Length: 109
Image 1: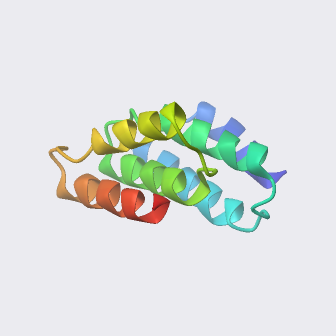
Image 2: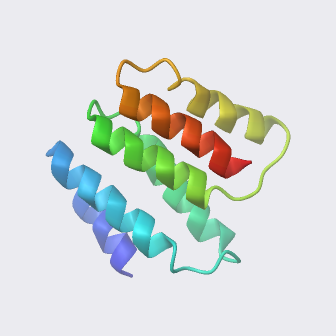
């Protein structure tokens, strides 16, 4: 799959701009996969969580968007952990990241 190749290519890259574009590619291509493929969407969310630690605002914003769009429906402790992760970006220094964190919470609900 193209998404698998994109993820593999991102592992070798250090450029924040390239990683942000790769995450955007994952976001767009992931939207083409049916919602019934929850394991696949969860994998995209897991990749986004890894790159969420990047220092670039563009990468963080794309990762938060992927988490909001592709997170499978979850309840209980799993949902609490996800909301805690996203809410930790509400106080980010960059307004773009804060804004995307709020949008992600809205998308999840």
